[in-house]
Length: 236
Image 1: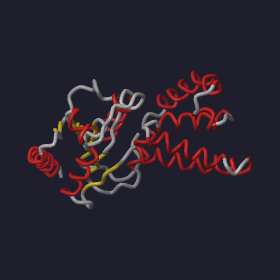
Image 2 (image 1 turned 45 degrees about the vertical axis):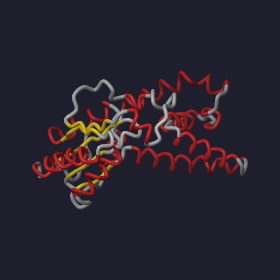
Image 3 (image 1 turned 90 degrees about the vertical axis):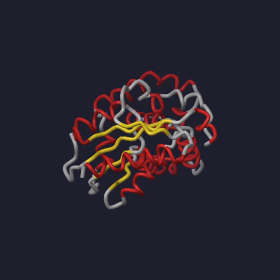
Image 4 (image 1 turned 45 degrees about the horizontal axis):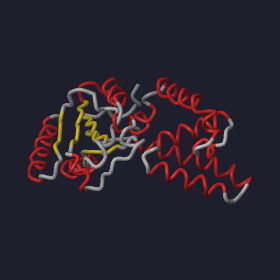
């Protein structure tokens, strides 16, 4: 169920591989539409907020034991965020909290983690199945602009939630780029990141409403953006 509040005139769910340029496309669209008309929403924002809230809680506990442990947790959290393993880290963190376990040891390569791996995976899936729209609901709270642009759509469940909540005003936008173009932007295949669900969850999704080709041809990209902007204005 969608939160109570303003109902959007249009929801654009943007997705794409790493270094495909989905964030660039999202910002380009917002700049053309204007901040008063279009809000860029990131599903990762409430995820990071949850990180911060839980980290504060862990930090208070850590200071009671040793002044060094809090720093170790911060470094481990940052490392997981940078390598694209944010969701795995959050599952470990929350699972550890709920079950009175050691978060740092759950993240490490240890017998301790292996002992709880199965339960952690099952717990994570149960949470997602019970409330797949948790972050979706959080990210739309208090948004007043008529056009919502979700710049980091990653799962079919994300699309399903927005379609069920807002119906026909929801449009999917897939940003694609040649592997060579992505490499030129700094992409390097990383096992556990580029083959994870967060990157591959929409590979077999089917037909997207819009496909934006971002192979490096600026003129072609501009033409596609103009078409999409014209569509947005037609819905207002």
